[in-house]
Length: 207
Image (cartoon, rainbow, N blue to C red; front, side, top):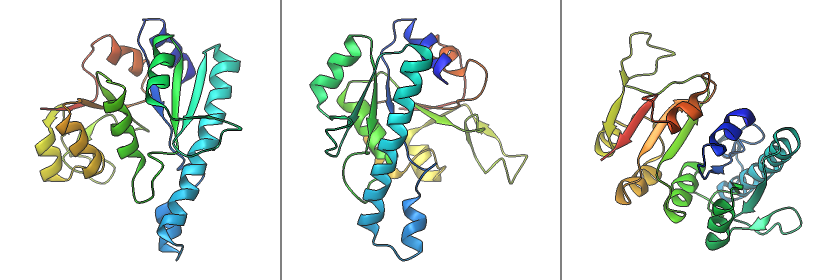
């Protein structure tokens, strides 16, 4: 992934990355096991900070990419607090900004954090990177091999059909602020750079 990010930066594109923590902690599962939902969500936010710090180290050490981590909750010893104008300034200087801890609030998903940050920094597009899923399908392609891939759909279609693009709060936020979404497979060869260059890849959700 680091090489893809570097190749996009070399095109002069500004990039912010919202980091998840599902590889470390699943708040929904903890809640099912009886944990208080707010506590589970805060634990999930801490997991995203761990992921962001690991990604920051990899991008800087292995790929020479200048990176800043900003957290929506206060962990000043390891990350900057999220400050919108500072984030924009980092982007203008060619740095990658890693947004951690979601929105800083429980009961809100990382999807909503991504949509909110995209709107706040004035992003041209929100890229939803998936693992081994190359777009939006009318049914789960892992269960139904005949499921049809949707190359383009509107926000309303995604909401009405509950296609799992992202949660409804995040999708509504993108719709209200006209931020297009591209859902793609991050591990498809050169996918990030190909999208930035304008190649039709994945599925586009827009007005």
